[in-house]
Length: 150
Image (cartoon, rainbow, N blue to C red; front, side):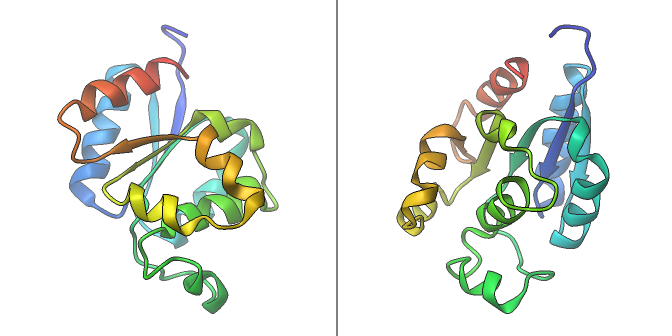
């Protein structure tokens, strides 16, 4: 989709990482819808969910804005992004299941995600969403490749 403006939902609590990802999105003429907290993510998702071309989300984030039940599911905040994704993109009032294959979990806690997903109904998501370790030396090239395929 060259020269087409794509809106990418970016959810990461790390300011520097959010900025770097957003700049990479702008390099491909995309628009980053930036969120650094659950509160902001909830609001921006409700406002923009129908316009989103892809999702880039961190796993480990603070749980402020979650219910006690949601907090219990985060494995000590290690998979907060996953829980937000399940509860909003997959099962929420503003569902966009078509984004499953256009979602990238960009995190250093990918093994925790694999170990934490025990509900059979969500196992297919682990093979459908894309995952990229923040420590990977080629992370920016791989991130660019993901965005170019949206």
